[in-house]
Image (tube, rainbow, N blue to C red; front, top):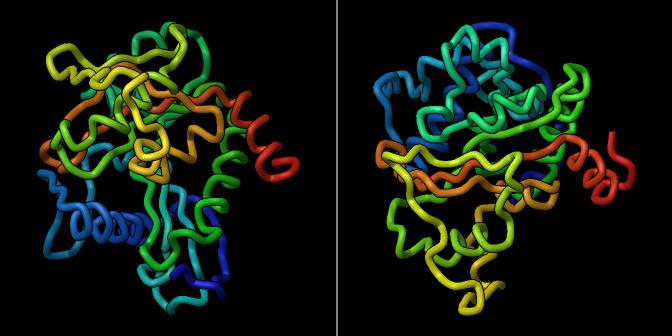
Length: 257
């Protein structure tokens, strides 16, 4: 059950301790729960990190009633990479998996999202709403026009994921001007089951909550999935025009921010 008495605040990480608190939560979710790993993961200190962390802004959701230390208080995180940060890093994080040429050529201001997670005690409550509200402020203040980033299904067995992947392909494929594509050397088609043969309610139930959230905000998926054996996930690339996000937020939340 989600906690019912949190004292939420949301802010960008400013100190090394705050960044490590985010990495510690990521460790609990991505490594302990989902079985992922990576060359910079610190199992002794319980930190999930990579070479891109210094270039991202790290949005933190804190429940200040939960404990005295920053590690106790950080219960949600989001990584945000601007075009300037990607320039310093040499690439966007998801360019290892996806060809982003269509977005780079668009001339629109881009923001990459990643490593979104909530502590298990806060799922199903208002935590993600607070993170997304803060994200909307960040987007507006920086004039961001297109959001994108990978989101994951747990596991790498494509046969088990055929229904939800096919549903995303048939019903939520990005328009050509936003349609990023898995790199050819790793391309995994999502067109696995004809649309007429899908049980749509069953397929949608198998779509992770984060992906459903983006779809409700007007998001799309790129063409093709990426099977990430190191993280024990199958990834899709989500793309969202912020104008559509603003309109959808107004419908969902009664006016948006």
